[in-house]
Figure (cartoon, rainbow, N blue to C red):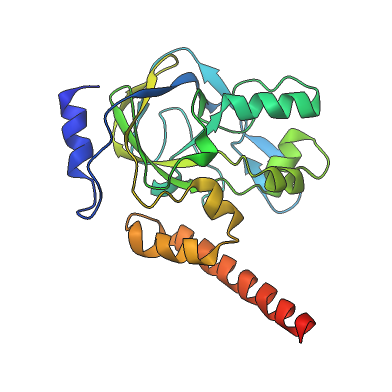
Length: 245
């Protein structure tokens, strides 16, 4: 990792954050994937860019996407806090065993297939240096009907949700070029310790409320997700109180 990238990482840390952890290689980019072709999805969705395939060239990362990639449904996908989607090879292999099928790079609609890093258990706000680009872990992937259509698996949304190996969306802090074989370095891990999986499950409201106060970089979408969890948790608590009365 270059001195310039280290300096860039330090410059975007919130004032209250701990200093970046010592740079250590914890993962490897196995594939960088971009759109192969848009697909047609039945119903109101229309076209989707979920069909990603690996490329052999190094790919330029900009603030909103990878060069050669795009989003069709901009209402629910894309934007600064969903610029890049990463998925762990170890989770893909587990799904492959369960589904008894090969799950090639890009099958999850991911831009990055990463080995050696538990992506779904990354801490929100964590920073990764890859190539000469810098990323921030910003949100879990929420499965949708398009994802189920693409996989062809029955009850896929429910199964993916229950397993909660969601992968992670990344925000681009420093633009640059990345490619297969690049190291993934965790150069900062926020002290709050709240993970992508914690946010996706959303059962511990006190934990989510702490995220609101301790991670200032979270997006408006994540804040809305926390409020949806709050309403659900409040309903569950009220129902439990009624049953015990």
